[in-house]
Image 1 (tube, helix red, strand yellow):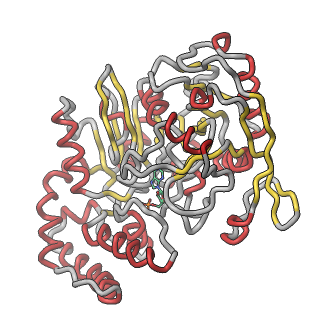
Image 2 (image 1 turned 90 degrees about the horizontal axis):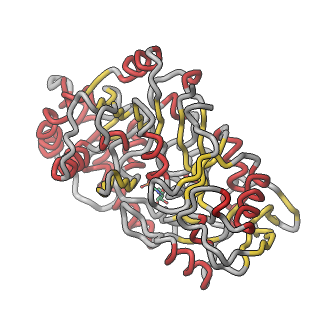
Length: 432
Ligand code: IMP
């Protein structure tokens, strides 16, 4: 039996919510290991719709332990709000159901503000990233800069003021530079002390909890957020998020040794989308892009922004298979392609007159690559709601088989609608 890591193999928004929910029913423990409340997962459980940003998907299911690992950046106020919303929907997120790693770095109001100040300033200079403005990047900067306030600091009111002062020295210099008023010690202290009692009951030594659960033979699901092309190292830098989104981070971001991480499932959309700025070789700023966006309901869960849409890019996903160690993919939203007379798939790029089969690392080269397409015949029947291969039009099966071949990984799950049961199971990741 394998523990399972779920990652996005494109730019996020591949439809992880449904697959993670499907898998979390089979798991005992569900762990978030990177990112923060920039993620947006929509879950439909027993007909009820839950929208989660920060909490692991396990929280909406009875009898599961959910974990926020140290690799996450944690906004305590967003947490309290999300827990409150779930309570209104009848879900009690109690400390026996959720653990937060004591060494998790906090997102404070000054991180959110700095994110916004910079994005506003960048709008005029053309260096905008298009972040979610949730403070994710600034919070990771402080973590790596060794000046973050962490969850455990909320329990130590003697040293907390010193930590806040240290943070303010750094932030106020930045704020002055950007022409914004300084943040005050009193305001930040009040912000922290007002939520400390709501957070501390959940705090735990997560590495130990996971070690115990793993030794007890429990099934652990690691729930990635964003996608491989948004990874701080492996993505389309600098148009990326500020964490490692790849599967390897599941270990470092939770405190479980890499040996405990088993099957890596890459969630893969049958076409490509991205939100925010940055290169997107197969983007279609035409009626095809409009068609995919409208039919696929391509709007961000967190920010409501319209997603950019384009053809399936096998070069990117093949690279994602390699850097994550993806064993199988969950292919989603195939039904969005239903009815298209022909479908294009990018199989390689042309860069400065040469044909290459990978995404180059440099920003300039990423902006210059031109996709080389293969054109496949579409299908007139519908794949929506199919529950077995026999229900699929022959041409749709051909499309799927061709993608498997191009990316070098098999389809483990095929999702044919947002409904939970509209899923064709080829390999159960937990049993592999
Ligand atoms: P940040 O994570 O808010 O710093 O934003 C950095 C980049 O990651 C921007 O392009 C965002 O649109 C993108 N991003 C962050 N979270 C998600 C997500 O959950 N889905 C898709 N894109 C995301």
